[in-house]
Amino acid sequence: MATTIGFLGAGHLGAAIISGMLADGANGFSAKHIHATCKSAASAAYLKQAHGINAHTDNRKLVADSDYIILGVKPVQMKAVLDELADCNLDDKIIITLAAGIRIEHYRRILGDDAIIIRAMPNVAASRQASLTGIYSDDDLDPSEEDLINAVFTAIGETAWLDDETQIDGITALSGSGIAYFFRLMQAMLDAGERYGFERDELYDIITWTAVGAGTLALDNDHTPPEFADYCQKIAVPGGTTEAALAVFDRAKLDTIVDDAMTAVAARSRAIADELTKDW
Image (tube, rainbow, N blue to C red):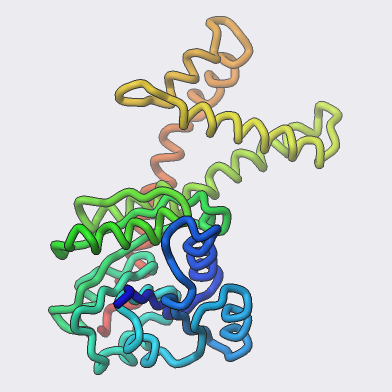
């Protein structure tokens, strides 16, 4: 019997994963083996029409029909969903949660100690199949189970399997929120660039393609271990223009600012989870 995958709460992220899984049929997934639930019948009908999957509003039916259950609801909604699933038969089911902050132990308080819980943390680039997804499991998964989970998330980009659950906070700080750091820098360049006489649409293209160039070079780095500083050294000729810019970053303690920002993300993720789960 073919493996079935259910998306409980198929919002924007769930829809992006489904789209990636079914793109060109390259990933071996079939629409008839994908299930999804939505808040409204209208949203379910749209998913069914757009992707040909089995979509409806009945979470309990989805659990019964699925081997792998991907929880795509927001952290604040998770308790209500878990309470609904608590008396479902979860034997041999693998539950994958996309929620930030909430630890595996919290899920098991409601679903039972034997529940198989996987945490996965994609980012917004999933909508363009360019996400980095951090994945953690404290269960010994079969190779076939790992392969299937990996296939789901490589359908939207790349994956990084983590050794410790605390690294999920690091993935949140690096990748989940990290895309916003780059956009913040790009926005600062956009605003500063106006003084040079460019229109904002011109600046947008210039900065975007500069970012694409940086990312492309980074992906081609064959140093072991790779360092982004390698490219700074190549570009920043002693006494030249780029060196002058990097010196400004150093005086402003950019490294410290980034470290503080990432620490704040991880701390906030833990604090939100602690607040949400204090009565679980």
